[in-house]
Image (tube, rainbow, N blue to C red):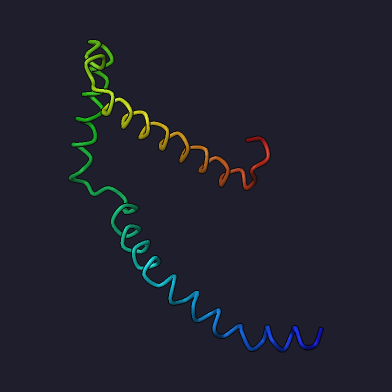
Length: 101
């Protein structure tokens, strides 16, 4: 047992160094996208979002959504699913527990 602990203690600095080397570029990419994608909307983007919502409502009323390509429909479905899942994440955070979901 003592030999195992001694070997482990000798290998820990090398393992930590390898983990840091491996994770640095990935963390840099993560922070870049976090700063770009997770910022709140600025006031200039709000009218664009309202126009987009009006277009979606108009598409639903007139039935023009039936003319979407499969790729566009799939992307719209993925975006809707993402919004739906973020809603659930917010609910779980708000309830401070995953019980009930």
